[in-house]
Structure formats: C-alpha cells, structure tokens
Length: 283
Image (tube, rainbow, N blue to C red; front, side, top):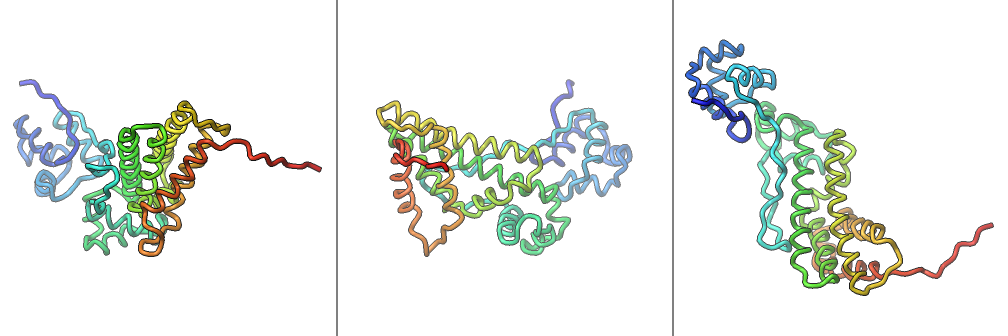
C-alpha cells in the first residue's frame, strides 16, 4: 500500500493516530521512538494535549510522512449581504484575546490575563494557540480577510462607477464601526507584528486601497474629472474611513449607516476634486 499524505490541519492528533495505525506501529512502540510516555501520546491522539514542535517533528519522522503546521489561510466570517454584520463569532480564546489586547494593549496583555478571563489554565490557552504572537497575527489576518471579502462583494454589487465608490465607502465605514475592536487593534498594534506578519498586513491594506482606487478611476473614466491623482484620492478616502473607528461610540455617535452616507458624499466630491486655487507665498 502506498503511504503518502501530510500530517497537519485540524485534528492533528487523530491524523497522527491514523498514520500510526496504517503503518501498524503500536502506541508504546511509537512513544518510545519519539521519547514520549504512552499516556502522553494517547492524550495527544485523542485531542487532549498538544506536544511541542520538536516532538511533532519526531512523530513525523518516525511515521515517515511530512508534517504541515502552517496555519490555514485566514478566512473572515461568512455573510449573505456585505451590509449585514452578525456578532463576531470567534473561539473563546481569540474573543478574549481581542478584548484584552484592545483594553490594555498587546504588550501589556499576558497569556495569564487571557486565561483567567476565559476560565482556562495557561496550559489550556496554549493547547488552542501556540503563543500570544499567533493570537495577534491571526486576529489581524482574519479581520483584513473579512474586510477584503466585504469590499469585493460591495464593489460587485454596484451598477455604476459612482455606486461602486459609494458602496466601498459604506462597506469600510460599516466594518470600522461594527467591527470596531478589530479595526482599533489593526490600527494600533501593527508595530507589534513580526516582520512577516507586518508585511502581510500591509499588503492587505494596499489591496483595500487598490479596490477603492479602481472605483475612483472608473468614476473619472465615466466623466467625473478630477486632478488629484487617483492613488492619492483613494488613500485619502480610505484613511478618513478607517479613522472612524477611533472616535465612534455606539449609542452616542450617529448610526453607522448615517456616517456612511455623509462620508460617501465626501468621497464622491474628492473623486472630482480639482485645483483649490490657493497659492503659497514664499519669502
């Protein structure tokens, strides 16, 4: 029988167990080969614990199959309508981490604070996630994935260039109000990501800007003449929409859809902005 495939993804322990049985390796035999106790290996195979990276590599080598611990591509919550925002459905550890990171800041937050608030031991937190860094990275990647998905849907939902831009402004505003915690975390903790995470996050931001820029360019191609470069216009539009998360207060600020209407008017005016007529005098 050909023995191929990768160990990885959800249910890692169950996959290890399946590979062990396929190769007709006993539990005690495999445990001895990788330096684990049979009870520890059994707990891992049944999803009750997670060995360290070195043990996982040893299991992979002993079973003769590749090990894949790469996280899945981040995917935002599913939605039927880009305007509809259901409460964010996150696993308890991630939901708690988001709240703690926003309240006290990433660097001041500790795994113990997260564990205490969601009723787990520190070991329980580490069972669900490798580190605090991974929590931050996956929260931000998930947020940007959702924003991009909604922007793509909003763009496709338009029948004219002006409606494209209007939809996109509304989409970004709604995201930064209904997903305010995620938006604030993204704007304040970019510096806390490692180099790779920071690069991915900046690429995602540019993707949002590029979607808006394409709508601005479409408006101008349709006869809305503006003299400010489309890239600068799109950057300004996205920047003003993102900033809403900094001051928006539910129940106090105007409703999100009202804010979106006002900002849509601003964005459409910016798309056709011409020279101000003002000149600067120099001594």
